Image (tube, rainbow, N blue to C red; front, side, top):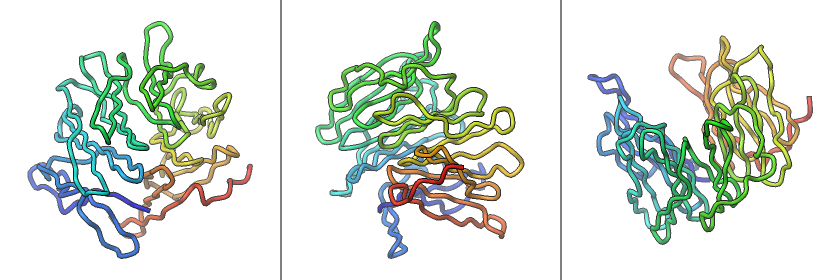
Length: 301
């Protein structure tokens, strides 16, 4: 299993920001790393997203400490060790860039005007980029053999749209995603899509082949939730309460379990969930890796 991370080597005295020297590939067995990408401006650059499909690592780098719309997208080929830039911002204010990749295809959304974004499909083998959709779009993901994104309209609110990954052609929105509630945050991995609905209280999930979404977590007015992520059949989040512990829920059973007593966060891949949690010593953290495909379903509570 390949693990990628951003190597922080200190704190910039002028800005107080981390100095991020490079993006590295970690070897857990040898306890060593190798360089994937060197930051041009380590005191400002930071990786904000990335996805690995077994050959290609596609990742986004933010170049400003003040702006979210100064970024570039890069692709690293693990077979050659070479990296190339495949896109950059258009100078338009927009959300943080999210990228996804599978089977040599990469997908992301990019603001091209103040109110309009385009969904791009990029073939990493042929270096060809095409526009899949254009509208009021914030991000896009690969789910199974589809490209899926939420699009806002003044009449219908936020709706999921879809296109075929192999061709980029629009297709009918899959059953189960054609009618959803008020979406707040979205995460996707493999054949699954998960999101927070309403006033940050409910988590819903959907997989390719399901006729309708399933509720993973719903505490009504008792607990607000944030930072949703997904890997395989597992969905992670943390609750916005005194300790902000990390939770994970199982799409197969709807059960969930708390993974940390307080704080922490989760990083996910297609079949890996890295849980980072505070240790007993200040600024010391522990971590462990879950492989969703290797785990039995959480028992129904």
